[in-house]
Length: 432
Image (cartoon, rainbow, N blue to C red; front, side, top):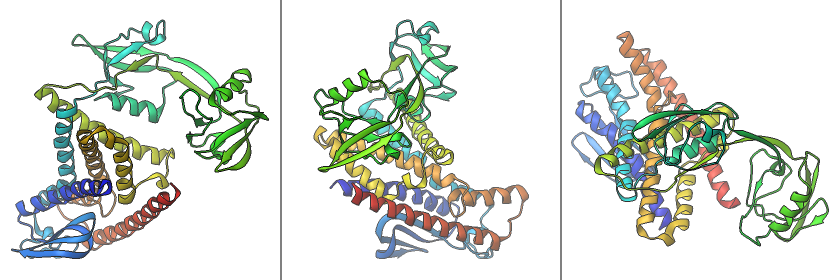
């Protein structure tokens, strides 16, 4: 059931994208040869008028094939290339636009049921720099480091991905209907890090729950699930014992020898902790949801859509900066698997939470697909829009053969990337 729900959500997002192209093509009197849901061999098809409607075997995709879309032919009525350039721009842009429209409509539904999570300050550290700068409990954060904040998750995402700046933090808050600027330098501390997360429960065994990418324990070969059995020759059997040792012997950059139990096998390793300089915000903020009026819900839905678009753009930026790589990307298999894992986590909370969780996935995927298709990459909608906008500016099309060649090469490269990502997704299933 969980994977069926995941496939339904992903399929709906892709279908709505292709529906945008289809409806605008029809409105522009462009002949649609085939409107298909899915990829691969046809399971079912029928023809009505000039269009064949098809259902294909793989539910991860869809297509809206228009007459003359990838050809030089312009003389035939109903041909894509014969339509006015602004009509063609509208047809190509309709897919991403429909994705954003879907994200907005689903956001209205989710916020209508669950409410929105405003980034409202719930506590300010006493005598902290931010308190001295004037931040107060109850302030609503509307901007952080130049980015408009739609909800608490957006603020949390920015902090998680970018970290807290070491100086010159700028925020804008709303208090009693007035906007107030808050500028301060946070408290900065430097400590040595091994790079792992552990359980906070009392009496928990010293198990490595997660490793920080690029930190010493990961590079030394330790793995999530390893249970620490000794550190520098001192045996430990609980998280309290490990923490007690670290309290008595603070990390100072000296090499650390550690042994772990990995599925009954003792593994030894050595690494050198690295210094990590970090800053403290000096305040905490709300992550709970609250209901809004009808107007407030519509306004918050725009903010919700903007948040997911912001998350997508930030995620793409991490690929460019090298914080993450192509190996960390997920395709249809990875997305459906992630939705299935989330279903297992929330199924005990009831049907409403399950539905809202999958609708949130629909918002994320729809915004993601909209942004990705607007990238100026050949074969994607954004790549086609580049050629069409140039044509609109010049008043004539570029070389059709060259344009088609560019899109074909782009499509081949995208298919190779999709195969690589799918291979990684499947490999991850066997690892976990």
